Length: 328
Image 1 (spheres, rainbow, N blue to C red):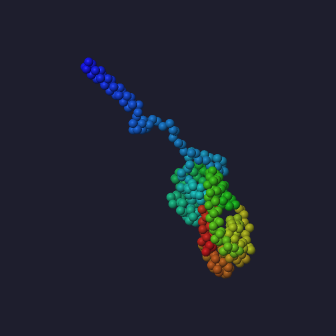
Image 2 (cartoon, rainbow, N blue to C red):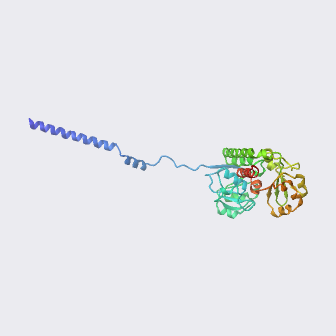
């Protein structure tokens, strides 16, 4: 009897151990370790397709064009368009020097690693080709050379911004061509704030004082409202009794030396692009007897920003000049 009980008990223990072993085996086969799971996932091909670069579209005088991706090696052939593209976040890698044989001071901080492809109005086509741009940006002043540009890279030909009534409108037109209208309004808004701050510091100090903007080039040029209305309407300077009638087609009046005493302003903002002609003017009694000359109120300003510039960076640099000259 005892032997029988012992045999039954032993049999039950064997069966129990087999059941536990089978259960453990099933669990191990159905539950993977983290390492195994990760390995399995890595081996499975991804169901997501690789992302393609977004197409880059622009609309110029030729119509809409589409590039397969945003250009990375942009060339600009006009200084004001360099200014515009920097402000829009599409800084060119290739551009031209200004008429003064160097990058304008107000643009230099943005152009440390930029290659020079010639001078404004005199692009070196072979050099441009050697740098392999993926987009060239120019304006209708370059109509005759457009085909040469287009053979090198897609070319955006914009309307001549200098014919716009203000730099803001010229800048908006450039931004619109590249679908960056919102960015343009943000930049113009920042400029407007800067301008309001400058007016608050300067207006009451100069209100009623007459101001002349004079450029010495190959002749003596007197500029008016076409380019500098904002100095009179916004900052409070008065127009001299003799004041030029200007337009987009006739931006200045050429003066004879004898006309200067009739103008006789309190202040002269002087753009000096011809040293020899200016030196000869300085020697004349007519010049020496001007009110602004006697009072040391002739202030030289940069041709690059005050004449050649037509964008937000140049406009802000002009405000900085006014602040420096008149705020204190």
